[in-house]
View 1 (cartoon, rainbow, N blue to C red):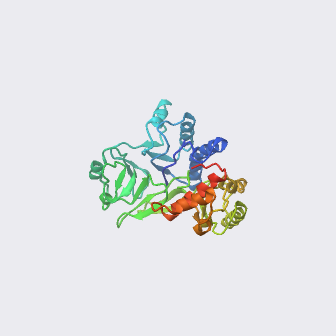
View 2 (tube, helix red, strand yellow):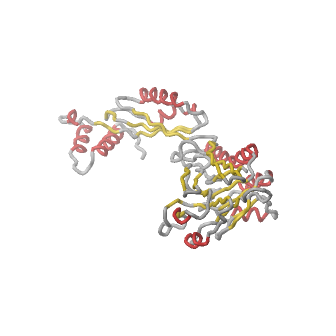
View 3 (tube, rainbow, N blue to C red):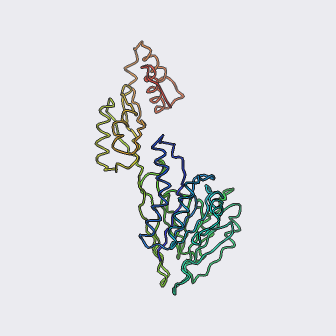
Length: 373
């Protein structure tokens, strides 16, 4: 039997952190349609169940059109069972929407704040695949004590929270890994962490975060997707496989601009670096300018980003280079610039890196350039 484990889709995200206007709207719609793509992939792969381990939505108030798309897909793929466990971003609105339609799909299954279990293969002649799940509130300690499973079954448990060896203080979303060892769990399907992670739980099982289905910001760079579980009902084995699924990927590219004096030179190096990476035109790129530059170097982040913007869906550049100041040049300089640089140099309360940043900003201000932080 094939099962998909996914989490943290965060449908209906505003997507306005980096994007504006039509691009923000387009990206928001793309994330919503990821659920459609996920269901299509599940059908193509012969998947019989999809476990959604929390944060299907991004906010407590879900737009009706987004909820309608999700419900339409659940109704469309009647041969796939959907098991939905709410995360810390999810609230009652989607469930209320479904109930408001007057017809809850037979293939849509929920969890509560007590242990709920489902047999995923009721017609199989092999071992039973049993899925357990519970939603966190103030109940973590009691939940762990109450969990029981038949060791002869193939046991999958789904929870939403941050892994920790022990229960965190005042953190109801913490998953206490130590309390789940030796409990007959074959696969612990988790949500909440936005990057793929697969680790050993105990001698019998593993625990896994599939990561978010697609990155939304530059703290979520790289490959994103879901986990495909291939379950052998006769042997009782579960083989997990990460499936790269993201339509758009986000990348942070470090470009060392040491020794370069102006934006023209920097643009040429940025283009060479991007060419070598072979990123897709669909992708979103953050260019991080690093290294050591002269205090008079001209670095225009907006111009640098604009030079390659047409090659990708989105590009931003951020100047994080360090300014190397030769203070000796300004020892006898009677200009306002010389006075300013000596004033910065003489301060005993500022470290060298910060001094460089202050010099950079000051020189930009003295040249009449607008400073935006």
